[in-house]
Length: 532
Ligand code: AHR
Picture: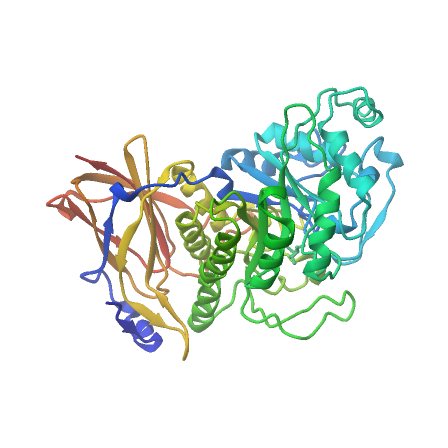
């Protein structure tokens, strides 16, 4: 039975320290079934603002330290993260991108206006080779988004051939001439992006037919098999999913995407120069407790969104052949003051970290259908992993609190998800919405159980009593991501304010095979358990 704690009561409890065990978590290893695919921890890199230029790519001649043109500190941070998959070149940009502009000698590459994102002039110096070589160097699987909105079938077909053919065809020879002998064997391929919006403003019936046509000519080369991803719904639009499942059919696609952002209020005002909605999304750094809960509540709604789509997919594809690909998700706030509104640059606090953990906890539960998720975006855009300094680009990059969450969740990568029963209080956000004080996730790999507890309560520590069916917990240790002030963030030249620290469950907190774990307000505790 869930109790309700009002927001006022939660705030009043600010000074309260460890409560009695007010959260119960019972873990059921006997019910473990699905392996958590590593692709759940995927990233997204778009030609948007300073994600590519100034973020990932500075060019070989830059005086900023770089490896073959890739910004060295950013490269190293991503290498350490072990990014499993990265989506590129967009986003909205993908449906205006003409890949042939981004190959061959840099000085010959045409310039285009990035009309979606601030009207910036794109010089195409980062193209197919630069992206796919980066993925290779990082050990990351590339995920290419093809252009359906403004590109031709022929253009898409040739791109696939250029990347994947090992023959002596003109496209394969052109790739060789441009310095790459062997094909990259790209696997993940998206046929369009947000085709209901920036990707062509299509009706779903029209898109479904276009998908079938474009997809036909995106050929498999050699033994490589494309994993074909259809452009999916905006948030909870189940009709889009219904028509795609019916008209495209499970035999013609491997994945269907969905995009969901945690936004308080998209707003109606547009930026006078770029036309981009300014919105009332709120500041990434300055927020009240009420605003904190509102955005957390928005983020948690992703569970209802994926459930809606999965229900429709189950109807047409009970064998779950088609994966639901959450290939854009994360928080979206107003841009940092003084930055280009079209560049979507936002800072990231402990609030973002809590939201990232709670979202991953949700994805873990549905990996029988969810095969991939790509947080938006990897560097300098929206809920990023890494930030570089626009004013002083030579400053070392910083990693965000969300970066630490992704690092912590490496423990769950390709482990088997274990269901559990969680009992805890709820906090009332407004007339209609509540958020639980805690969300958790559990997994097992090589007989080792990992439990992650995320305290969503902005003001109060909560203590969980954790037990495992048929097992005794004898020791537990791991790490914690916590800060005194939820608004804490990492800033240039100031060292990491927000970073993980070791966490060990004291012997006195282990009794009769159960453990009690205190999780401070707005914190994440990640524990590896020793059991018998
Ligand atoms: O991630 C920013 C933008 O959000 C993407 O370009 C688009 O697909 C979505 O609307």
